[in-house]
Image 1 (cartoon, rainbow, N blue to C red):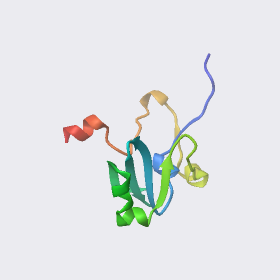
Image 2 (cartoon, rainbow, N blue to C red):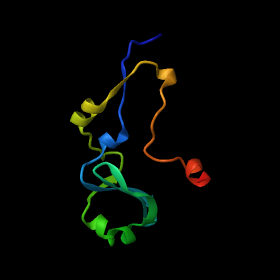
Image 3 (spheres, rainbow, N blue to C red):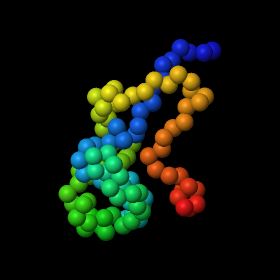
Image 4 (cartoon, one colour):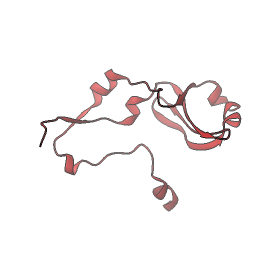
Length: 108
């Protein structure tokens, strides 16, 4: 059964906070995965580090901190609506990822 759905493409950066923002995800045993964005542009790339070490960095201390979990998210609907692009052919759609995959990073 085919559904008559309209698909829209949005960049994941439009889902992020504005200003200096540190997004963390618990990696257990006192470690976190952290990325810092400045106005939706990567300011500090994905890093695996001790949370206590991150907390002592100046840019972390002045950032809006988001600890990602199942309940944490914020969506800027006005930016999404402004920047969405209509997808006419889902089979030829190529996503534009905000970061490299592990294999791409290792191949550098």
